[in-house]
Image 1 (cartoon, rainbow, N blue to C red):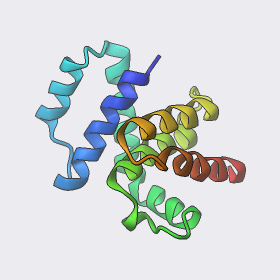
Image 2 (image 1 turned 180 degrees about the horizontal axis):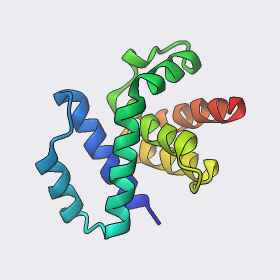
Image 3 (image 1 turned 30 degrees about the vertical axis):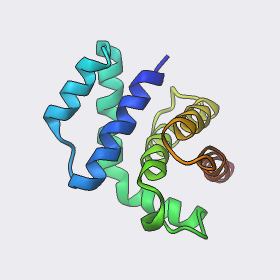
Image 4 (image 1 turned 60 degrees about the vertical axis):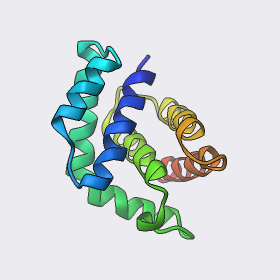
Length: 131
């Protein structure tokens, strides 16, 4: 399972929102600390590349689907979680959409507010319906 890899991605993307770039030394330290294997590191690197290349697209998608909260007003934790899930849903054919939604909801319930899991799930479900 990639749960630990996704949580590691969450930490990297969350931190990068405050520094405007991914801290390479922090990323390597997290990979080592979480004991990610080579496949997990490759998965993380692929998702990071997708989120970097498609960040503006993801922001537009979130603006469209979270009418009450534009992407710029989302909790940084929720935004990070949604970016990971969007990368998987839109650009990783080997990851079932349901897995992405479930993992995102689990990370949200662990790292964000008490209502975040249902918010994240709802946004992702709407995006998948339109896909």
